Length: 165
Image 1: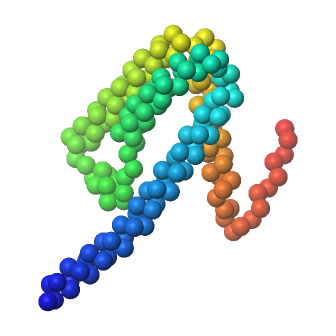
Image 2: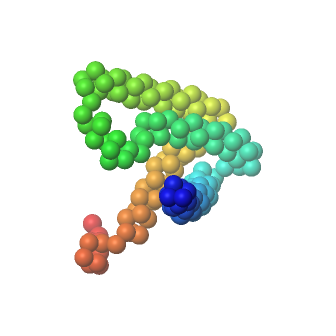
Image 3: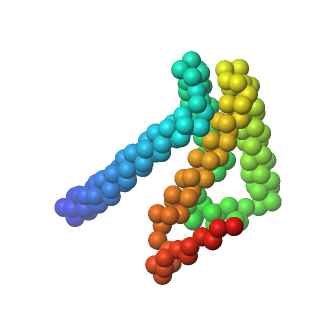
């Protein structure tokens, strides 16, 4: 009887913890979808694509983004504190293997970017390909600025006014 009660309590605890985790996952997916929609709108305003260019560009860009994001996640995974502590105490041999793997992924990322740069240049004029890279940079900058603005300041002090140069 005690074992049954124990297992029921564990099951209830796991169920209670799984619901918020799945809810958080859904919220993260919604946020990610909103960011993607903002990015499409941002790119549309910066690239000024024709209908034909747009039809060729977006499937290719989405394919590129998916592959690049996968490599970036492999390069910069989210580590918990336990994993960071483990990494801080690797042997020299293990550290060398990790660094070699890191630089191999960097090489894969560079190869992917070169490959897709050539593909983009086949479907878009050169100046629009450059605009795409600039739009990516500007969009990341805008996201970071929005994130900074949404975080409360220390001691809830208002931000000092920006002095014009």
